[in-house]
Amino acid sequence: MLNERTSEIKRGLRKNVEDPLAIADFVSTDQGPDISIPPYGAFELVRLAAMMVGPYSDKSNYRTRSFDWAAKATALLEVYRRVILVLPPDCPPEPFVYWRAMFRLSDNSLLLLKLLPDGKSEFLEDRFSGRR
Image (cartoon, rainbow, N blue to C red; front, side, top):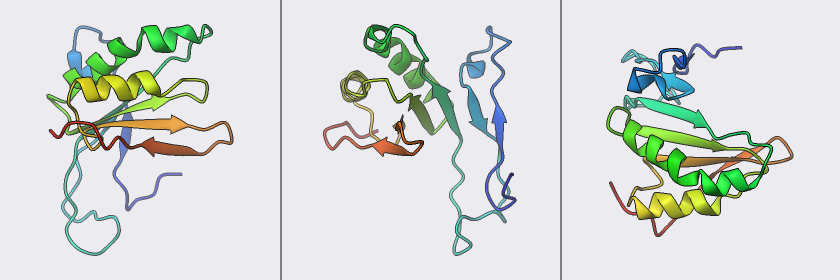
């Protein structure tokens, strides 16, 4: 159920591969100035995109394709303020943390959301990542 107080999320347009904005699986829609989370103070408008990594049946593909995912996310940062890479439970996070640091991106611009086996998730912070 969609919470009316939160921003609306729409599915990315994966069908039109010629449009670079269609790379993301999910993107945020524009928000009105009256929307705030929580309802105190001004809400900073942030366009974001999320991409789901894999899933791959061969677990080694997460490592070998980590650069490709990080490069796509970095390209989307030219259009979106934040990009979230969603890592499945069987995906090792280390190569993605490594490429985020190599691209000198902050963990506030390229976010890594690790899905846990118990159904929960956590954002992976990197105190050594660059600041953008």
